[in-house]
Image 1 (cartoon, one colour):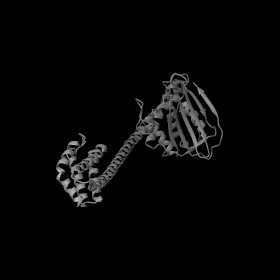
Image 2: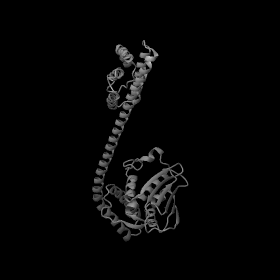
Image 3: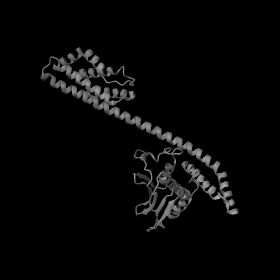
Image 4: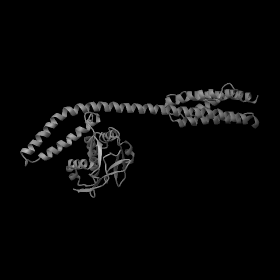
Amino acid sequence: MPMDDLAVYLDEHEATIVKEFKRRIAVSDSDQYKGLIHLNGRALYRMVIEYFRSEITLEDIKELAYKVAYERNRAETNIGDFVSNVCMGREMVIDLLQKGPFTPAALMPALLKINECFDVFLVHAVFKYTDLKDTDLEEKKLFIERSHKDRLTILGQMASSFVHEFRNPLTSIMGFSRLLREDYPNLPYVEIIENELRQLNYRVSQFLLVSKKGAVYKQMEVFSVWELFDEILSFLYPNIVDVNVDIKCSIDPTFQLKGYKDEMKQVFINIISNALDALHKKTIDKEIVIEVSQSPDNSLITVSNNGSPIPPDLLSVIFEPFFTTKELGTGIGLYVCKEIIERHGGTITCESTDQQTKFSMQFKPCDTCTSGSMSMSHHV
């Protein structure tokens, strides 16, 4: 039979073709199987011969493809080199047959079987290789997530311990500084000391929120967003003076949110503090805009500034724990903001261009909210 003749011809030239294949294949120096790849070439060559003789099926070809895919995945090399080598092997077999003593009529069905053989092999090999890579990536992702959780658990435990050890003396110092101000109202620097203590207390509270223990013994309350921002801007007043920034607010005076007020205060202090940092290097027309609006479906709070933009490649990771671009940053500020807002059933997003960086926070509307608006502007 014609196919038997073709198979015998391939048998006779096996050693020559495998030797040439070994010489021409693309092999990475880092490939742990580089000395054995030519054996895969020999297996492919034998696969064609046995397929000609109907000694193997397409299912057998699939099994070989899976075997090679596992090897290529363990080698951690470029799949492109593998595909190129397989295609080169196909060309070598076809060229060999075309140089043989066979008529076009005999060659045509042989070429169809060769292409079918190699196509099935490549499809299954690449599919399996891709599946293995996806599985590896998923395992690495899970490992990274577990590592993050472990680090956060440790940080939470450290934060909780640190806060309780630190807060007692801090509370005493804050109390005595208030007594000093009451007994000696003209004593210089007391106001500065109190402000620095408030800033330190805020930083300590931020670490406590990482441990998620800050809200254990608290009750949710309905609070005025207008009053909340008034407290925040008063708290940040020294920083606002230092940066010399224009603060513009458009807030419904009747607008209310339900949640943990202290936690939400931490969120907006953090975001406005970041905005002040972004405006530090700007020389003129510094501006922070705070806007609150609502619809029947959601409540929206935005804080925007016209300072230095966040690079596009960093926007997707700014809410990740421990990520920071600040020299002395902890990398937990925006992560804590996201955790708090999601704990309140909301979402937070960020957009940044050369003209404006805007943080948008959406919440489910509070039943007690009403319509209306009021604007205020602080120029320092």
